[in-house]
Length: 128
Length: 295
Image (cartoon, rainbow over all chains, first blue to last red; front, top):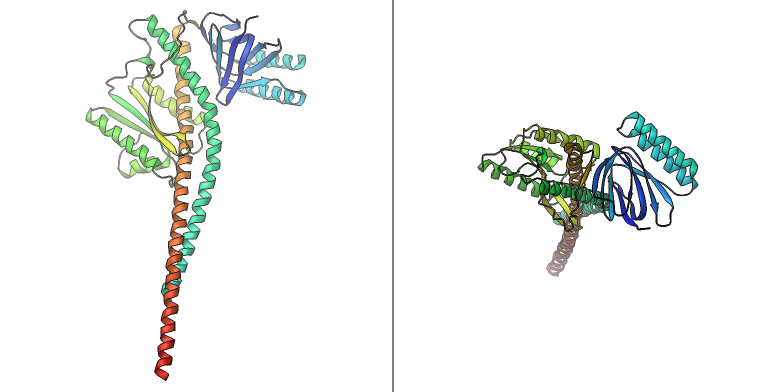
């Protein structure tokens, strides 16, 4: 499968920068997936969860509060205000989940969007 | 003998000053390290944001021959009213750091005055505020404490007010003046035009030719949100940049002060020794001549 570059950038640093197979983004007009070779697109991102599949087919989720994404053929750049990666070992993961929930709950979005994002984070937490 | 005592006292006082300046230097270098780290992190974000904004703006320009029909992108030439935001430190003892910024702001002020442009000054940092107040130049906005501890929320509140004034047509142009950090020993004065967004500043080497899809697709929602973020972040980044520059300037100034103090102690020591020698010689002469007269 063709790979593409993904960057997730926050004011506090780069969360992820590498090659991925695909990424699912919480666009303001609805969730959408991006594969390599996607047409150029710019979108607002809502409170939610970015899920990307790395080259080794492992999935990683990143909770975000809001931001922008720019997609072109070989590269996806997410510029977000705040993000927490949901990965790591057991104790780290629990902490990450807490941080992600705190981040989402503080986001300036509609309560349904926040609730949906939080429940998604919880689901991810259970499945990992 | 009075002279000897005086020199000794002077040496003590210079040594004390040296201790203080050295401590300040150490504090600044520690703070600089932290701020530098922060600046490095936020620089990536700032760059990407600018890149994204520029690309969208250029695409829109290409699509529309008459330029972009958006308040944030209107022609910045021949402004009638200009807002100048300038950042100085809250504290002194950092060499030419503050005076450089102040000088540049004064120059801009005169230039605009010559062109009959109304200028409003918005000051961040106590040193700049004090200077313009002392010279009876009116400041339309001032904030203390922000330049010493940049905080995104406060910074965006501060600049939002200015951006709102721009959108409502109160001003035609917004400029941020600050002293930026280059490396440990150099600072560079930066004058950035924030609004209208200057799309020519950044040359993109790879502008993909494919048509740009925008979501949500009424043109202004995304662009407005993006520009707002851009303005807020530019302000925040300028603050961090300025803080890093302040610390490096202070470090340098204190380093020079410590060196000078060392030099001074050396000179005073020589002087002290000479004076001591002189006193001994005089005493000796007195004793010898006394003995001579006894014979």
